[in-house]
Image (cartoon, rainbow, N blue to C red; front, top):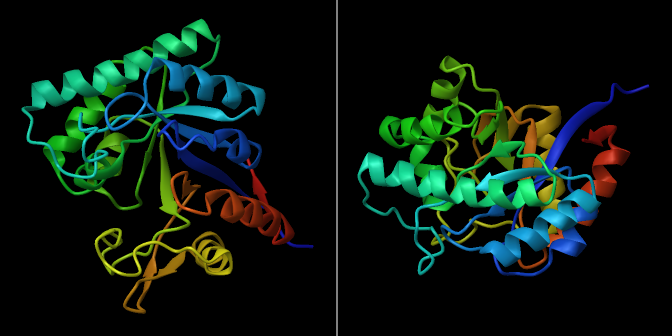
Length: 247
């Protein structure tokens, strides 16, 4: 009998797509946009209720304060201003969680903030300081071998290494830019192959065909990927058939 591996399956939600009720039954955690790139009090409340209903762990998904570009461009801010912005976004979600009697499980930065913190110490430290300011222990979702993951571990913050089901990688484990062809995987079979390789063999094939070592304890399907629901359902069913438990 195969040893059962367990994996967390997450999605970025509350971003204005409105497909959360379809996605939630297949997730074990979610990252809720909290006003930086998308989201407001109403969407946060709706998504928190759905997460609770489906026993899905709740994370904050803060971003550069940039709704115009959906948080996908780097915004030039001082460390103090960036700290205040992220802190405010997380606090707004925390207020909703208090009113809905739910817990904050983790923080996962969004878009350009996520990518920058993966390699830039200054940005990473700002996010870590926000996490340290929260009374309860909060996990960080971050890429394997990233600058922010290393700093978090030094600060005794629990890190869940995140990999992306529906995105292609470069040789240095950075994500292929969405501006490039082949950045996003749309075929559910290709997504499954990609994910099984990362979970079972701890390797990912880069866009240029190189196998790169990777670790992942949480896998993300982007909620705004066109066929996110179809991908998630297929992944969920097939991971279980491959002795991989979602939890």
